[in-house]
Length: 123
Image (tube, rainbow, N blue to C red; front, side, top):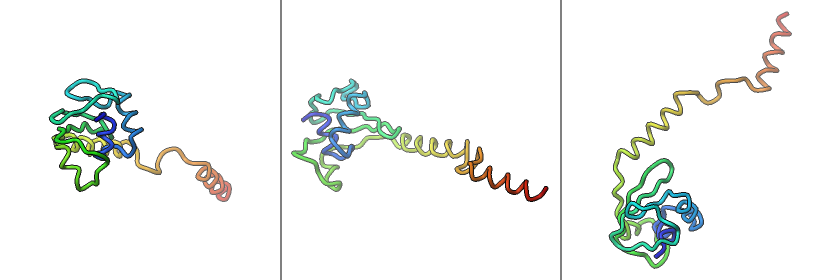
């Protein structure tokens, strides 16, 4: 089975086209080598893929015939992603919040008009 089709079947990507694009960009590796979308995948292969700033690590257990339901995904793959990968994403989320709070910063056009209106009334 092709790697892009496998990743779509086990629900790592919503569409097969998105899985193909990820392979072309080099986000998917099979057994440590960057994989083209047409790369064949077999049982016991190790897949590493980068999605949403998380490096997922998978081991192929079996090949599905078609896209499977979310409850059946564990039959076809074993997720060996370390917990530190998910903790790292949480740290990135908190780091982004630290720099600038939402709604602060440069005033909008409406804010400027309100400030000018306030200054004109006090004079």
